[in-house]
Image (cartoon, rainbow, N blue to C red; front, top):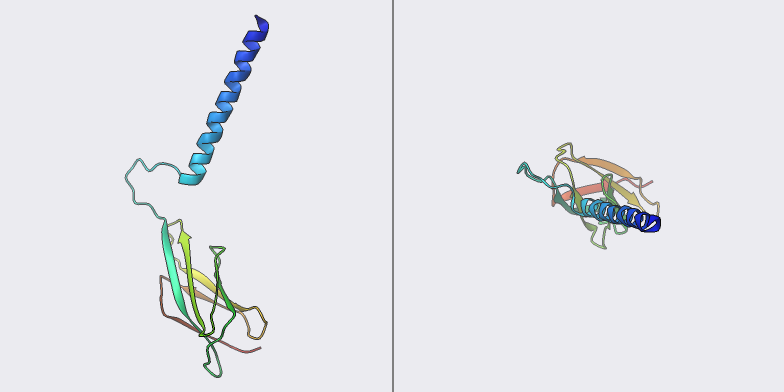
Length: 128
């Protein structure tokens, strides 16, 4: 009889642990429910533009464009064009810091604060 009670106790403990694990995974994937009817602050930010040489105004390829709030990195093409999109999970209107860096180390890194979504960001980089 003692082993049956221990078995039931262990089975209950495992069931509670499994339920807790499932709830943790659901919250991690889908967040907490919004019972108050408030608007969700998750949205996608899209930015694009052209990177050029500061002296000759020629388009620059191979320039990495990134932001401090995302792991996304865009690389400018042969026309200097880049397109970057990332998800924002807050209602912070402070803006987004864009970082421009040359993987070949020809140009000095450049950081700028972008206040909202822009589709025509034109950045000129200075040669080292």
